[in-house]
Every structure is written in structure tokens, then in C-alpha cells.
Image 1 (cartoon, one colour):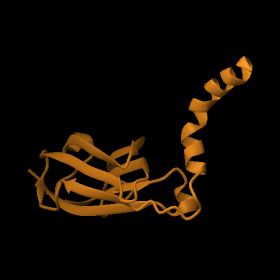
Image 2 (cartoon, helix red, strand yellow):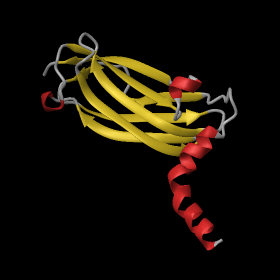
Image 3 (cartoon, helix red, strand yellow):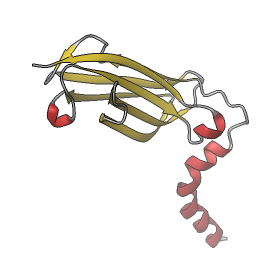
Length: 143
């Protein structure tokens, strides 16, 4: 009996998140939203410091599992200047904050348009269609 309890104690932490996700009823409504609070779509200048604030949440009370924030060049979508992707596993919501300088060293250029996209999804976004994204566009003037 002690061996069974010991095995259960050892194995449970590795499967708890996955088990929780597998227990979801088919058709679970995640009602995820990514709310970009800042920056806004106003024009910026090269070397400006911006504050990134995105609220990721589930309006149905589900766990927020995965988040991603990406800032990419509108004309060259393969030019990603900023990327943050994380498995957060937070109850109902996760409020992300980070400061970023829009500099050439960080991959930004003046006289360009940029797209910031924030997305949130469950463990199995391909199976449950939970991926939701919001985006804003902004322009960067040269100095």
C-alpha cells in the first residue's frame, strides 16, 4: 500500500495539468480574450520606450494556459522584432507587463508600420478551437 501511495505522489505532479485538461467536457467554452491595454495605435518614434500591457482572460472561468505576444513588421511578416510566448497556467486571467525600447538594436526601423498581436489558447487549441487573438497596428517615425 505504501508503494502505491508513493508512486501516486511521484506521478501526480507530472500529469496534473494534462489530466485537468483531459477531464474537460467535450465542447468546453473557454471564452478566451486577449485585451491589449497598451501600447495604443498612436504614432511612435524610433527609440521610444513603450509599455506592453495585455490582459489575457477566460470569461467562462477556465484556466489561461498559453499566451503569446508578437510585434512584427507589417510589410515583412517574417521580421519579428519582439516575441514573448509562455505557458502561464493562471486561474481565469493573467495580466502581462513589460517595457520595450523601439530601437534598431531591438529590431525596429523608422518609417515602418508594425503589428502587435496578442493570443491566448488552451493546451489543445488545435482540437478545441480555443485560440483567440487581438491585434493593433502602429507606425514608427525615424528620429
